[in-house]
Length: 287
Image 1 (cartoon, rainbow, N blue to C red):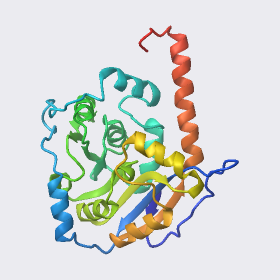
Image 2: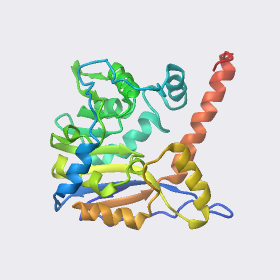
Image 3: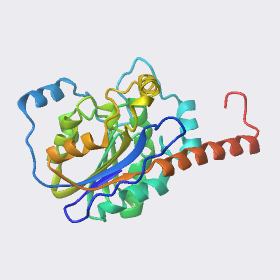
Image 4: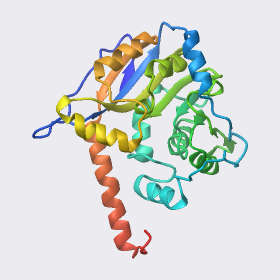
């Protein structure tokens, strides 16, 4: 995880070490918007060519998809592992930790990239009272997110849209903060994404992103096999490269934090809890 501001020096913890190889580490990156750099015309054109077609902000009708990868049973399994509305480890508590440095409140607006089924968006809205726009490119997940959108203090504060991160309309507003988990691996062009984020933030707006960074070339073959299975559009980048990309986009880095040990614990806890639940409730054969 990384954060950015001009007044707090960056701190980097020691990466996870295994006997013969250092695997990718999970980092939080947080930046505060400083100098802005305009998108080049060719970058804008490339983004427009990849536009999504449909918004689910006011509708439960998904765009047509050839394969429903996120079937009901798969969604059910994810929620058994990570909690209602969550696709990644940690649930509400972890999202709270990640977003606390954003200094959110009831008058702030947040853009959540890769909103999934809305777990992180709902968590932020409930804890801080912020207004959330979540964008999710997968139609099945976007539908699930719409159905789970939280009502906070009698008001709908969470909107989930079926949009690609390459869609101009996803960044049409100005936000106080932007939050995303494990989205950089899905981007072949990280610079373009960061430029879009910079242009969608208010002056001195903040951004928090978590993702994997490379640690050791000796792990290359296993990492490449994993990336292929995940159908990642990008590659695992080194921390220094990410710092440079953030700076180029106009962000002042506040922190770059190694969360690997914490993340491993969250993964372990999720699977242990699932196993205990299945044993206790005599799971059927399908489960």
